[in-house]
Length: 115
Image 1 (cartoon, helix red, strand yellow):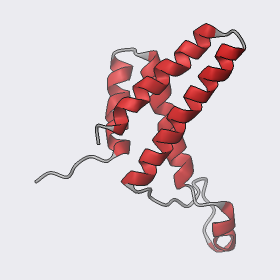
Image 2: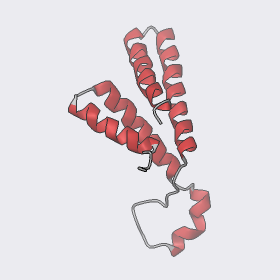
Image 3: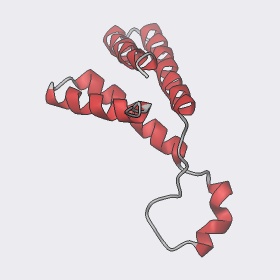
Image 4: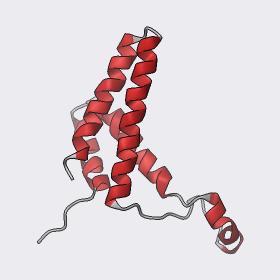
Protein backbone atom coordinates (compact mmCIF):
# COMPACT_ATOMS: atom_id res chain seq x y z
CA UNK A 1 0.00 0.00 0.00
CA UNK A 2 1.45 3.36 -1.07
CA UNK A 3 1.92 6.09 1.48
CA UNK A 4 -0.50 8.99 1.22
CA UNK A 5 1.31 12.18 0.16
CA UNK A 6 1.47 14.84 2.84
CA UNK A 7 0.15 18.35 2.34
CA UNK A 8 3.55 19.72 1.29
CA UNK A 9 3.90 17.04 -1.41
CA UNK A 10 0.40 17.77 -2.70
CA UNK A 11 1.11 21.52 -2.80
CA UNK A 12 4.45 21.03 -4.56
CA UNK A 13 2.80 18.87 -7.23
CA UNK A 14 0.01 21.42 -7.64
CA UNK A 15 2.58 24.21 -7.95
CA UNK A 16 4.24 22.41 -10.85
CA UNK A 17 0.86 21.99 -12.54
CA UNK A 18 0.02 25.67 -11.98
CA UNK A 19 3.37 26.68 -13.47
CA UNK A 20 2.78 24.53 -16.54
CA UNK A 21 -0.69 26.06 -16.92
CA UNK A 22 0.65 29.56 -16.22
CA UNK A 23 -1.99 29.96 -13.49
CA UNK A 24 -0.54 32.97 -11.67
CA UNK A 25 -3.09 33.13 -8.82
CA UNK A 26 -2.53 29.48 -7.92
CA UNK A 27 1.24 29.84 -8.15
CA UNK A 28 1.26 32.86 -5.84
CA UNK A 29 -1.06 31.24 -3.30
CA UNK A 30 0.77 27.90 -3.18
CA UNK A 31 4.23 29.47 -3.04
CA UNK A 32 3.08 31.57 -0.12
CA UNK A 33 1.81 28.55 1.82
CA UNK A 34 4.92 26.50 1.09
CA UNK A 35 7.04 29.39 2.30
CA UNK A 36 4.94 29.75 5.46
CA UNK A 37 5.30 26.01 6.16
CA UNK A 38 9.06 26.23 5.64
CA UNK A 39 9.31 29.24 7.94
CA UNK A 40 7.30 27.44 10.60
CA UNK A 41 9.70 24.50 10.40
CA UNK A 42 12.72 26.67 11.19
CA UNK A 43 13.53 26.10 14.83
CA UNK A 44 13.04 29.29 16.83
CA UNK A 45 16.30 31.12 17.54
CA UNK A 46 15.75 30.84 21.31
CA UNK A 47 15.58 27.04 20.97
CA UNK A 48 18.83 26.84 19.04
CA UNK A 49 20.82 29.62 20.73
CA UNK A 50 23.14 27.14 22.47
CA UNK A 51 23.51 24.98 19.39
CA UNK A 52 24.68 27.82 17.16
CA UNK A 53 28.16 27.98 18.66
CA UNK A 54 28.59 24.20 18.51
CA UNK A 55 27.12 23.65 15.05
CA UNK A 56 29.20 24.13 11.91
CA UNK A 57 28.46 27.32 10.04
CA UNK A 58 25.64 26.84 7.58
CA UNK A 59 23.24 29.08 5.72
CA UNK A 60 20.42 26.70 6.55
CA UNK A 61 18.74 27.00 9.96
CA UNK A 62 18.01 23.83 11.94
CA UNK A 63 14.61 22.43 10.95
CA UNK A 64 11.79 20.53 12.54
CA UNK A 65 9.28 18.62 10.47
CA UNK A 66 5.67 19.72 10.86
CA UNK A 67 2.95 17.15 11.25
CA UNK A 68 0.13 16.97 8.75
CA UNK A 69 -2.16 18.72 11.24
CA UNK A 70 0.38 21.51 11.83
CA UNK A 71 0.68 22.07 8.07
CA UNK A 72 -3.11 22.30 7.84
CA UNK A 73 -3.08 24.95 10.59
CA UNK A 74 -0.55 26.96 8.58
CA UNK A 75 -2.84 26.60 5.55
CA UNK A 76 -5.81 27.81 7.60
CA UNK A 77 -3.77 30.82 8.79
CA UNK A 78 -2.93 31.69 5.18
CA UNK A 79 -6.59 31.44 4.16
CA UNK A 80 -7.69 33.61 7.06
CA UNK A 81 -4.97 36.16 6.30
CA UNK A 82 -6.17 36.50 2.70
CA UNK A 83 -9.79 36.90 3.77
CA UNK A 84 -8.83 39.58 6.29
CA UNK A 85 -6.75 41.37 3.66
CA UNK A 86 -9.67 41.24 1.26
CA UNK A 87 -11.88 42.91 3.84
CA UNK A 88 -9.38 45.70 4.45
CA UNK A 89 -8.86 46.22 0.74
CA UNK A 90 -12.60 46.41 0.13
CA UNK A 91 -12.94 48.99 2.89
CA UNK A 92 -10.21 51.00 1.17
CA UNK A 93 -12.12 50.82 -2.14
CA UNK A 94 -9.60 48.50 -3.79
CA UNK A 95 -12.12 45.95 -5.07
CA UNK A 96 -9.86 44.36 -7.71
CA UNK A 97 -7.16 43.55 -5.18
CA UNK A 98 -9.77 42.32 -2.68
CA UNK A 99 -11.20 39.98 -5.31
CA UNK A 100 -7.70 38.65 -5.97
CA UNK A 101 -7.17 37.86 -2.27
CA UNK A 102 -10.57 36.14 -2.10
CA UNK A 103 -9.66 34.08 -5.16
CA UNK A 104 -6.38 33.02 -3.53
CA UNK A 105 -8.25 32.05 -0.34
CA UNK A 106 -10.65 29.93 -2.39
CA UNK A 107 -7.74 28.25 -4.18
CA UNK A 108 -6.07 27.39 -0.87
CA UNK A 109 -9.30 26.20 0.68
CA UNK A 110 -9.42 23.32 -1.83
CA UNK A 111 -6.32 21.82 -0.24
CA UNK A 112 -7.91 21.55 3.19
CA UNK A 113 -10.05 18.69 1.96
CA UNK A 114 -7.66 16.89 -0.40
CA UNK A 115 -5.40 15.37 2.19
